[in-house]
Image (cartoon, rainbow, N blue to C red; front, side, top):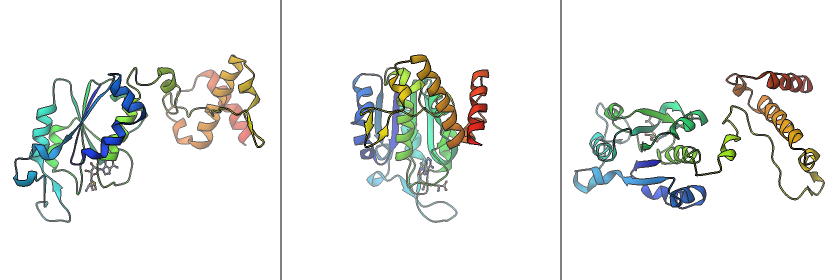
Amino acid sequence: MKIDIITIFPEFFDAFLATSIIKRGIEDGFLDIQTHQLREYSSLKHQRIDDTPYGGGAGMLMMFPPFYEAIHTLKRNGTKVIMLSPQGRVFDQKKATELSSENHLILLCGHYEGIDARVESLIDEELSIGNYVLTGGEIPAMIVTDAVSRLVPGVIHEESSETDSLQQGWLKYPQYTKPEEYKGYKVPDILLSGHHEQIASWRKEQSIQRTFNKRPDLMEAIKLSQEELKILKKVNQTTK
Ligand SMILES: C[S@@+](CC[C@H](N)C(=O)[O-])C[C@H]1O[C@@H](n2cnc3c(N)ncnc32)[C@H](O)[C@@H]1O
């Protein structure tokens, strides 16, 4: 998967791209993530990329021509161009999964008051990372890149992402590691029992219970199997 990020602050991404799983995904050839300095696509003096908005109003707006030039330079057949914006559809795990099967993404990071609205005719999608306004699109671009990258086959162990919270709709079951006990805080006995089937059904029940208790809003979108319905009834009764 190739991701090109257009920004006026490429240095924002230095640590992100040089750390942990993303770094390894790049080194192993599963990811090709490049940042591009928007100013290099400006033909103006001092590589200027912003100006005041027509019609008046506070702040500076990023100009259309540098984005036009950058997109036309980097775009190829099948590229998906995404603008990070608080006005977009809210990014979620479903969208991350969908984007992980694309070959090439271009991410546009706004700053200041945002980008001249003509850019909207060059994009395929506008994504928000939540209902709040940040100073720039760099952190949102990192969030999208991170969530998508870990779903690209080879980047992490696939079993690990398949059982992640939200991937199948549910929150993940609670997990524990060594030591078995610390100052009276114990790991549940079932996880030490070695009974794989019982562990699997305990985990399923915990997943359902956690989702029901912590994120009841997620339940509406989940299509329940007969077995899950039974567990949910049990969970419902114990929490009454
Ligand atoms: C201060 S914001 C501009 C907000 C714009 N004036 C508005 O009211 O819609 C500057 C840039 O930060 C990014 N940004 C801010 N909040 C965001 C969010 N929730 N999701 C994605 N991008 C965001 C966008 O790239 C945006 O162009």
